[in-house]
Length: 303
Length: 303
Image (cartoon, rainbow over all chains, first blue to last red; front, side, top):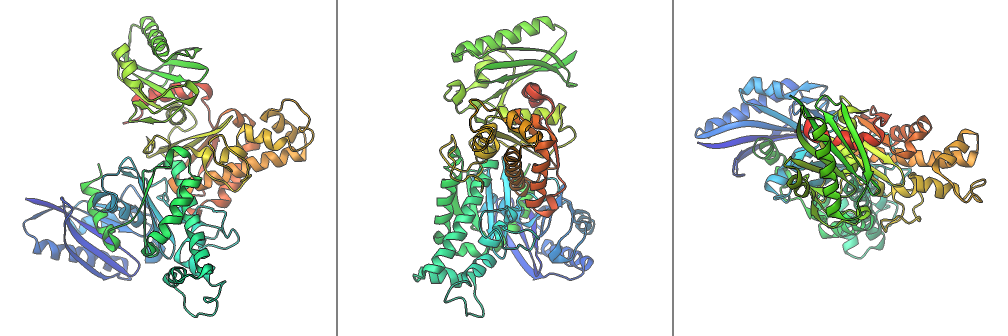
């Protein structure tokens, strides 16, 4: 019988849920709005999974891998998710009691990194770090094929590395000068708004800034270069600590592609310890499905 | 029969070699000068181990764990050791062919960290980072009980994290502004020499600087505070990436004790992501024997 796993990516606005075969094929996928109430959320996820199992009677389901936007311990206990208004809860127990299947839980950034390692831009690598650059900056760290969670599930919180850029700008975490105040979409917009033509625009997106840089606006280019240099110096710091062979850049801002990768790589090679210089940089490939693949990867590509 | 392992710490000037029981008792220890010639070095280590085995006929020897001052892959292959004038070599094979025992090899800073986790200040912890602050700054990173080596064995090269201190000072690695240009013994001495009374001294040690600070010299205090703040910010960066529950400070400069730990802890709590703030800081306990314990730990406390 063919084996498959469910991958479930629980976000603040929607839940993405898919069935992935052992060979890495996404057999089916659904997306539905996140329930406001915790118990209703687990009921809905269980119902969706059961409905898919009914449609795939010949598939042997091995387990369910779940990603949540918060710290997780022992692939079970979620310590809290601000975006979901959750406190501490054993997600593994909540779902496995409803499904009679083994359930493993991970932080969503870690899970997306695992997904990319298993079926995306990280295939063939066992030491990689993925930075997700969107509204904030998140990261997943995988060393020797294993996700690094840290003692309170806060490993990979790269967005809050203190950086020597905009050291007086405050971050949502309460500190100042964090990586994400300069290098996230939010930071790029904030920096761009100091300059014409962005100063008077009511609504600016990171894409507007990249487009303006592409069109030759020097101020926009300066903002893009600074975000890239800041991300590159942060990857150099990460390189000196965990020495990955591959850095993946994902998230909305990564749509800028080469324009962002080039300054990141330049700053990385400038600032990292020389023996680490050969690390490769690439864009993530799985987009919004990375968490679903990662959920299945918790069973199919983790020991 | 009682089980034991050999731990061998190969340094640029001497080799420290000990027999450690499964329960963590150092049964015997020898130290001898490092041979200049590689083959003679392995012969000497093998002879010393055989001589100890003859003295402990009732001990069942499980293996030999070796630390070297350079990057190591797969606990076997040393990629090169500048201090020993070694190129790439399979140390595991060299020694196991002479001894008919399993041999595992690790970078010395990683091995010392494992030793502290098994029998020193890190007992009971599975997520810890040890910074060794001496002539330079080295580190070992352990996540979920496992040493992080990185793809070219360069994980834990914390001494070369780019820092916003003395950004124009050059480092032995070819970059500028690395952690160790500010926060090593070398860096402390370099900074102190800008001030009286150190300016005219022929020979200054880090201990001189700490002693002067203790005696009330404000310039010396400033140098000590800066080294502590720089180390503390670096531990905050490490905290955001691997989230350990414990940081150990070892190496010659750690003899300064509280005077160094306090500014490190203050800067850590200021700069780390809030959920990581509760990490504990302590001094390493095993001193020069950490590598010997770590060598045995490769067999007794690593999977």
